Every structure is written in structure tokens, then in C-alpha cells.
Length: 144
Image (cartoon, rainbow, N blue to C red; front, side, top):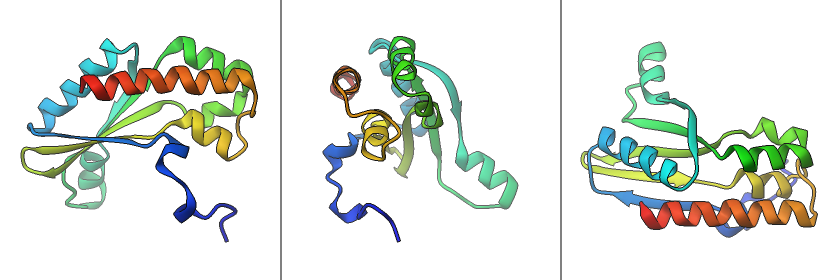
């Protein structure tokens, strides 16, 4: 039994954001990467679960790509407050193909989730981190 009822979680509680891009998958990945960088996020990690699964277990998955976004200043501040936050690093931007020429971009806030599940403190500094990273993500989705 889960301690939290997922059906009762508001998307705002976890900072869920989505967008649809009308472009090819590789073009969308590059667009997301460039937009992340323009908004202050580096991309230290990225990979294609679909390619991996298609190769390893013949999954026949449609294109699916994860860009691990990170703002070093925010990550450093978050680690000062909670060493356990690293278990959720990095902040992922996920791109999957809905259909050819239509890509879905998905993100949720690891900072909000960490507080929600008790991995991070419920204090003023963490609230500032949530607010500031939220503003960066909002800018990302506006520019996207």
C-alpha cells in the first residue's frame, strides 16, 4: 500500500509540465537541449531508453529520450540542505514521440517531489530553491 494516494496528487504539487512540439524527434531533442541551456540548465547526462531497450530486449519502442538538466548553483544549494536529493538528480526533461512529427516534452520537479516525500526539508531555503528552479522551468516551457 502506498503512503500517498497518487490520484490525489495535484500536478502542481509535483511541478508537472508538458508541451507538444510539431517537429521530428531528433530536432525536438536538439531544441529542448538548446532551450535548457538558454535557461541556465546544462545537460550533463542524456540517453535514449528506447534505443537501449530496443537493442537489449527487442522492445520495439517508439523514440523516447531523456535529457538530464542541471543548474550547478541550484544543485549545490540543494545538496547543502539535503544530501539525499542526489538520489533524484538530475532534473529530467523527457521527449517522446507521440506520432511521427509530434513530440511530447515532459518534466516534473525533483525539488517538489523531494519535499513531498520527506527527502528534503520543509523550510524557507528549500521553498526558495523550489521557487527559483520553478521560475527557470517556467521560462524553459515559455521559450519551448
